[in-house]
Image 1: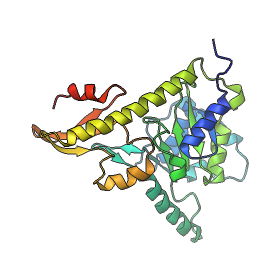
Image 2 (image 1 turned 90 degrees about the horizontal axis):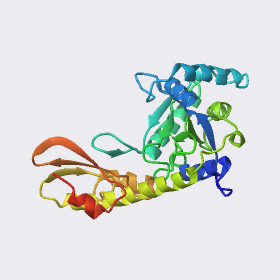
Image 3 (image 1 turned 180 degrees about the horizontal axis):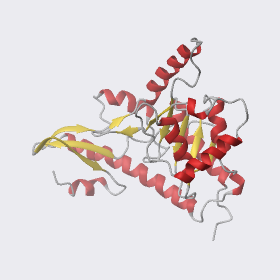
Image 4 (image 1 turned 120 degrees about the vertical axis):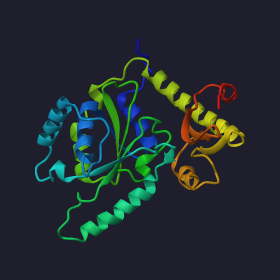
Length: 278
């Protein structure tokens, strides 16, 4: 049975908003979100991740039809999808730096009569893999951020930055469901807290494992966002919260030039080290 003290959907969304660095989060059907990102990011060869499903595209058309008149067509807008941690070997996205660059371009566009505010792309941060607890993406400059919650299968949590263009905010608002009409699945409060705790422990374990590997004689190269003497650390130390993620990439003497990925988990890091085979 659902506990009488279970959090309401609005309370859950408020928690996500705090982690994302914004004051406003909405619950959006996953199919509509996929269609929206596919349309916004499918420019100049960019991909918005997973291909949009037909039902999502149909629902997105309904969303656009329900929007107020006088707004620019959604097809005029462009977005760039970014993840806080990406690539092989692992890298940290400079969300703040990219947001500043795009803001400067937008100022240029505003001063040019032939352009519109939609000409320059805005950032969408996808934090689903490592969680919004690791990256306050909206505070860093992303206009939208997206995460997933175990209590709402079939939906995503979308954070809307305070500095998001009103039309982009309107699209999300129109696509979102009424928070009072959706209830989180039973037991999701516990599942959510367990996931956050697990991620935090995995991040802590990765720091211990990375320190061990850096001194290992067989390791010739190592990539980990928490290494203090790297250029990446200037970004990760100011843009990541509660650790540097669970990913460590290494090259060994036996396989030079080949990156091997290690992903820490929430168990004792010493035991994880003992199980390593390099």
